Structures are given as structure tokens and as C-alpha cells.
Length: 590
Image (cartoon, rainbow, N blue to C red; front, side):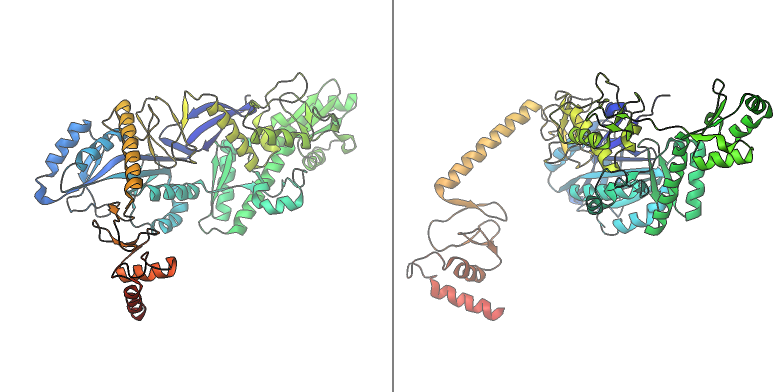
């Protein structure tokens, strides 16, 4: 049976991977599935409007204007007390496309006595029991951001949606990151499969890295109905929630009390279960004589053994007259004792050793399931490290490194022999390589250091980044420009740059500066370095552009920082003597 895909949510994209860490599918939908039971959506398709009652506008007129801009609206209603505009006429309007929201903002910004803002919405949809598990933490986070409106909404099939709305983009981005981590839970890792034991890391490095050196706990048993029931019993015994994330092939632990000892004990039980499940890969053989083997076939002991261990774990080797048990040795001994089988004939299948495909030393450390070739751990780790760190090469799909073998390495082999952090870094490198291979199809978000990806010339005109909520035109890869064509917007940018250059040239020629507070141009003809802005009346030091609330503080600053007010003694009435008096007054006031 083919190995199931494994999914990861990486920088705003859902990517599915198959053997060799090759991407089989990539989704850039606005509704992102973080796990198989949690979806997160972010949009900027809503505006908050308010107007002065004397402006001549009314709710009906506003609705007509909005319909003329976008046609059908998702909704349009009075705002509640949690989201308020400048006046008590606050109204929320939701659009189906972000360009319509931007067009509405542009229209109302040109009207007097109207206040309009873009609203950023976040949606977290999860099962009720998962939402209940993180409810206290979510409320604690939301109590620290009173400007954001939080609403819990009932969904179908016992699902709950948390909707957050606010006007501050950075605040919404920070909230999204924090709440995603809460809803994602604690990923179960194993202390019993420490890479130090396997020779993957030295003890000193492992202690520095801490939990990042641990392997994630997973077995396909947990995707079955029997596995779900087993997890339910374990969760009930410890008073926590355990979610089997089938998409990412992870176990997520939710402990409302955040008791580290309880979580560690649960991880120990999970690791123990996986160890026992993997024990079935051991094979033990019981040999029989001719007459004893015929008696075994007629006795029904084979059926009893299959009933105890499972049909797939008990096999008969007719030619060798042997019973083969695929289970841990302790289970094989117990079964042999219960069925009165010859214990003296019980033997473990011998371990096969061969040469490493890279260094050609004898090894039995890592065997690839798909091709049965071996590689030593040092060579395996080196190849994985190169694939992660060298993004200039093409290392995907990861294939067996044996000569003349190009069989892709199955994901379970890679996970079994790497830490969770290393495995995720490998998948991230594969995604990065895939995106770079198709520059005409994909483009990164225009925000510096944001790695989210969008489709160029996709089915949508404006891309709202799910990570930083920045909006980008997918046709020209510039800032979203509702109502303007790309060519017109580019011409506007060129004109703006020319005007800015002309302004900079003029300021350099005329010796002018911008007010640090209101950007009004200030020209200093003569006098000392104390100037007052004609726009906002801020007091400023011409030498360093620092601003002060009063003129006397400016003179104190100029004397201390610049050794004077910029005048030669006796050149102006506001000399050092006058400024000194002002300074004394300021010091006395202090």
C-alpha cells in the first residue's frame, strides 16, 4: 500500500509531500488548514464607516454607494459597541473581494466629515473540545488587546469559530501568530528515542538544543479507529485532550492546566505504545520436526496465535516447517508458553549487515524500505544536511545514494532517522526549491523577510498575505491599487519619485528641512539654531532636528549638546546670555 502524503503549513501555504520529500500538491487558499481539525483564515474585505450626522449621509445612502461600488455585499449593518468609528453612526460593510473594500475606502476618503478604516479579520475554526481546551489561554491573550473584537460563533458538526476583528494590521498579525500556536497545541516528542543514543548528536550539543533533539511521536496506528479509541482512553486517564493530526502525522497534546509532568508522562505512554507497535517488525521463528509440524497444523494453535497477535503477525513457512511470529521477543515467549510451543526452538531472525553506499564501511544502521539498501548514520546525516543548507543544488527528490539506484526514500524512513526540527527543515527546503523553479508562477510577499507565496496572475486580483496581511497586486507585484490600472499606478510611482527627487534637490539647494512632526518645509534664513515650525508650532533644534515642547528647553539642549546656539557672540539679541537666562529658568522649574 502506498505511503500516505504528509502535509505541512509552511509560510502561509499548505504543501503535501510524497516519497523523496517531493511536493505533490500546494495550496495557497485564503482558508488555511493548520491541522486536519483546525483551519485559519485571514482577510481584509471589511470596512468601518462613520459620518457626522450633519454631513447629509444616512444609512440608506451609504448602502446605495456601496452597492454601486461592489454590487452585492456580504453584509452591511450597524457596528456593535466593540468596534466603533469616530461618530456614533458606525457601520460595518463586508465585501467579497478585497479590491472592492479598497475602492470603497478610496471613495469615502474624499468626502468631508467621513471616517473610514480597513478592518482585518481572523477566523479560527476548530472542534468544540479543542476550543474548550484553549479557551482560558485565548481569553487571557484577548484581555491584553481590548481594541480587537472577539466573537465565538457556532458552526456545523460541533465546530466552533473564533472571529477577531480590528483596524491595526500589526496587532492582527501578532494575534494570529500567538493564537495559531495555542490552537496547534504541544506536539508530542519522544525522550525515549533520543538521537544521542542513536549517535545522531553528541551529548553536549543535545543539551544545548534541548527539545529540538527529540523525535516526534507518530505511528499509522493513530490514524485508525482503534488508534483513536486508544488515544481517547489515554486522554481521559490524564484529564487532557490528544488530537491525532492525520495530515501532518503528529500527535497534539492540549492540557488546560499546563502541567509539564503530566505532559511528559503522556509522551512516555505514547512513545511506549509506538515502541510496542514497532516491535512487530521483529521476527521470531519456531522450528518443528515433521510430525510436530503436522500436529501444529491440526491443533488450531495457529488460529489462536493469530487471534492473539493479529492475522498479519503470524505466518507459516511450510518448506522450513516453521511458525514465524512478527512481534517483540517478550510477546513471542509469552505466546509460546501459553500454546505449549517448543521454547528451545525459538530464534530471532539474524540481522543483515552490508556496506554503506557512501563510505563503503560495513553497517546495519539505516535500511531504506523501498530498495533494501543500507547507509551508515554519519553519511545519512551528511546528505540530509547538504539537502537542507545548499539551496543552489537540486537534491529533490531524495533518492537512495547506492550506485545505480534512484529509488525515492520513503518519508517514514527519513522521519525515523531525523529529529522533528530537521525533518521540517528538509520539507521547507523542498518547498523553497519548488517555488524558485517556477518564477513565472510564484512570487513571494513584497514585505521584507516575509516568505509567504502567492500565484502570479492568479484568479484573484489582490493577494492578502496570510502571514503579514500585506496586500499586493498579483498582476504587477506592487502595492494594491484599487480603481487604477497597473500601468497608471506605475506612472504615478514614477511621477512621485521624480517629485521626491525634485523636492530633495530643492531642500539641498535652499537649505530647508522638514518638520520632524508634521513634515512642513522650514527654511532658516538667519538667526540661531532654535526654529519654530509654522505648521504645528513645534520647537526644533536646527542642528540635529530634535523637537522640544518649549523654546527654553531648546536653548538648554543647544548649549549642552552643541556648545552654543549657533551664533557668534553679539550677533543677535538671543545670545548665550539670553539663552542662559532661559536655561536657568528651566533648571529652576525642574
